[in-house]
Length: 140
Length: 444
Image 1 (tube, chains in turn green, blue):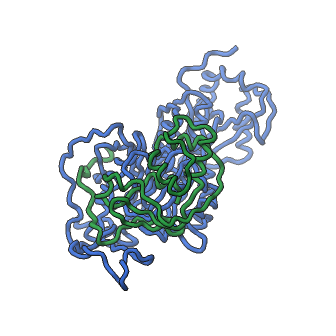
Image 2 (cartoon, each protein chain N blue to C red; image 1 turned 60 degrees about the vertical axis):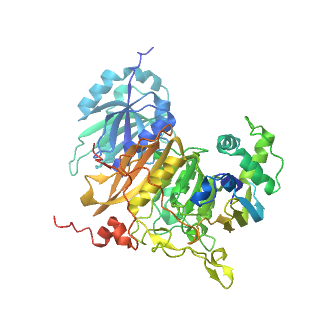
Image 3 (cartoon, each protein chain N blue to C red; image 1 turned 120 degrees about the vertical axis):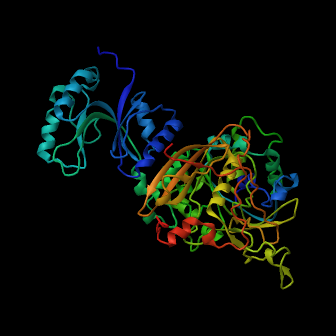
C-alpha cells in the first residue's frame, strides 16, 4: 500500500468519518518496502492539489520521513518533487495495520493490500437516503 | 497560388462496424478531451462511414488517435453514388487542394466495406484519378500522402452504393484491442471485461495522463488496466481480497507488470462500497466499473441477513475473532438497484466537477424501451450505450459530475429496496431472476 493512498482513505465506519481523529489512519507495526520508479514531475504537480498536507505530514513523520516542508508548496521544485515521489509513490507498506484514532478499529495490511471490511458487530448501516432512482426514456 | 479553403471542412470517419452505439459517444468524449470541436453531419448505426465537420487536419488526427472504434479519418474530397458523380465533385470542389499534393510521394488505397474488388478493377479505379495530375513518386511504404477510395456495398450487390474519396489524415487505436486481448492476459476472471469495451469505457470516462481513476469492483483489473493505458493513475477496491491479490504470482499487480504500466497502479484495497473507507472529498476524475450483476453469485454486501444477530464481537479461543487473520465478515444479499443508488451517491461525493462515472448495467430485452435510468441531482447523464445479446443486453451508463454541491430537493425518498429481513438473492434482483427463468416473458 502506497503512502499516497492513505491520504485518500479513512475509517470505514460511517460514525467515524466526520470525526477529525479518524483521519489520517495511523500505521502500526508497519513493514516498509522502497521501490524505485521513474520520477514524473507532471504527475506530482497534478496530484498535489488533492493531497491533504497536514495528514501527509503526520503519516510521513510516523514512518520516519521528516524532510517535507511544513506548508504545502505552491510550486514543486525538483528537491521537494523527488522527496514527494519517494514518499508517495516509492514507499509501500507491505505488512502492518492501519488504526482509526477515533474508534480504535484496526485494519490489517497483508501482502500490500489493506482490508477495510468491517466485522459483523460494528453496526453496519445502509446508505442514507437522499434521492431516488427516476425512470427516464432512453430515446427521449 | 490557390483559392481560400472553405470555412467548414468535411471529414470522413471510417468506423469499425461493431459496438455501434458506442462510436459517437466515444468520439464525442474524445472531442471534449482534446478540445477538437466535432459537428456530426451524417451518421447511421448501420454504416461504418460518418461525415463530420472538423477544424483542420492536425485536429482531425488528434481527435481519433485514441479512438478504439475508429479505423481512420480522411479529409473528404468527394462523395457520390457512382464514379461519375464522385469525379465531378472532386473536379469542381477540390482543385485548391491539388497544388499542395504536387511533388510529394503518394499511394492509393481502396477500402471496400461489405464487398471486394479484383486487382484489375482496383487498378482501373486508381487510374480514373489521373486528372489530379500527381507528379510525385509512388511509394507503397510510408508515402507522404495516402489517398483512399472507400466503397460501401450492400449485401450481395456487385456495385457499390456509395463511394468516398479522401486523403488520410489519421488513424485510430484499433491495434490496442489485440494488444490487450484477454486471451493473452496472464490474470483474468470469469467476469473480466473484454479489452475493446474496457478501452472504449476508459475513453468515454475521459481518462488522461495523471488523472485519478477508481474501480470499486476491480476484480481482476480489466478497467483499471485500460485506464492505465491512457495514463490514468488507478485505484481499485473489491469486497473479495483474493481477486486483488490473486495467487501463484498472477494478480492485478502482475497485469500492470505485463503491460509495463506498474507506475500507473496506485493500489488495490479490500472494501465494500456500502461501507467505503474512501475519504469524502472530491479527488477522483473517473469512476469506471462493471458492478456484479448477481447472476454468477448472489450480490452481497457486508452485514447479516438477520439484523438482530451479531451485535456483539465474537470471541473464539479467548481472542477477538475479527482480529484473526482468517476472519471473514458476514455478508448479506443486496439488491442490484440499491447498489446502483450507492454507486451514484459515491460518485457524487468523490468525483471532481466534470469528472465522469461510467458503469455497466444489465437489463432483460423485454424491458428495453422503458428502463430505469438511475438519476442523481449532482450527476448529469452523458450517454447510454447498448451492447445487445440474444435475450438480454447491457448498457454503459455515463454521467458527468456537475459543478457545485447545491442539492436539488429529492422528489421522493429513495425506495426502501432492502428492507425485507431475510430476502433472498432472487427477490432482490429481478435481473438474476429473469436470467434463470430464461427471460420468458411474463404472461404477454
